[in-house]
Image (tube, one colour):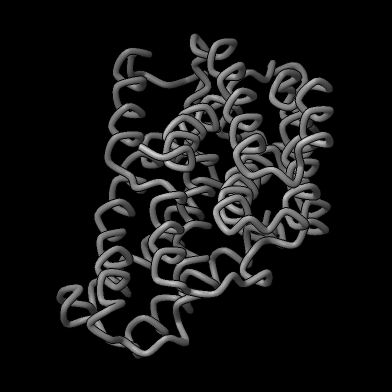
Length: 291
């Protein structure tokens, strides 16, 4: 297993735990009265059952590094515009929105590392640190990690290890946390961004026998999407989560128009991307739900 795959196999489970260390007393004012945090407190399922659900997500959902590696292996050019603008972090006013965007920026970081776009990494590391701090996660990106990044920011292998070590520390400190609802939004954001990047950067490439495997990878995300929706369904009483599920179901509907990866054509890929892009835009612009 190469370093990139090893990093993300670790990174997403850690991201899944990232948003769970926040004390309810420190929740920002933007959170709603029927927030995912209050739903999590009222959950009827046992912690062991919820933890088992998340283990299923980790094992069954292809992580962004996997789907992005497929783009890289097929020489699909890097697209700077496929990543979320760092300035969009200012739109993350709601607690749940911060969790979704923490996942999105994590996938963007994976994309930049895969393509060795070092100039794109620094600002996203800082933005991810900001979101983690605002979610009250003090050890996600500590000063020692930031110092190492500054020293090795142009070395791919070292940078991969630095990020891996940082998330390894997060995992050790948060392994017993139980804030699964917010964690689900982090995972959802990360998965969605991986799919968004893959469809956006591949959308202009005509289907050929050589790149048909990319259509297969994108088509297979339909099953992963259903798993994500089922996971979020645990928290559908929350208004934000309910809206997220509604948007994801629109993507499922678009997938239902495609019979198989073999039958999937360029027109269907464009239509699918349009649904993904519409939802993703609402998240990064902070308007996924109107109160």
